[in-house]
Image (cartoon, rainbow, N blue to C red; front, side):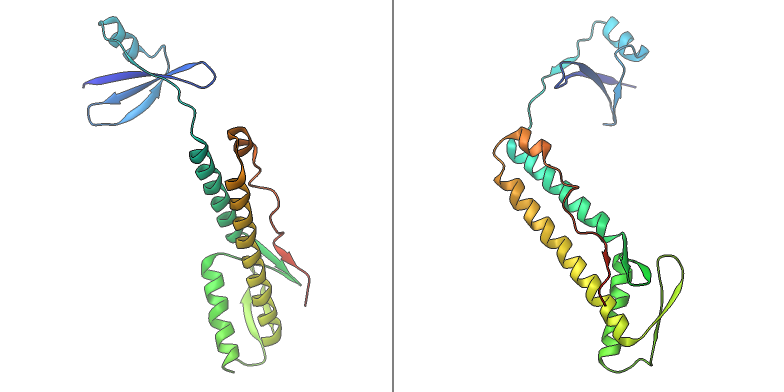
Length: 180
């Protein structure tokens, strides 16, 4: 099996070796890896790949990707409202929308059964269920608004160290509502 190695310079001044196999698979290997040592002993020379600082734009793109990931994680979290804790995943939100539409067209009785995050069946009046839907929708909108603000703040940063230090996990709304 043919293998080649490249020596990558790291930001901290260290190095790491990357092994590339003929089928294109790559892996990081220790500098004392026997196959690497045999390859070097056979007279091969590893190509040196210098460390290049990421551009300000690529750092901003990465930070905004982290904002999206944080928002997605919160969308798949748990929302506390009145007496229950409710799942916020897309499937649950879609089911809530469907039941809200049924309530709006008067196709439900005096209560709606909804299994909450803790596997407890909550019996909610149509008004209470719509209140829950409204609270979930308000929370969802708040998540989007915070993500938009964070991305604007990231775009306004002018130094790579400021982008790297930006706290994407702070300042998000809490996943609960006590209003009725």
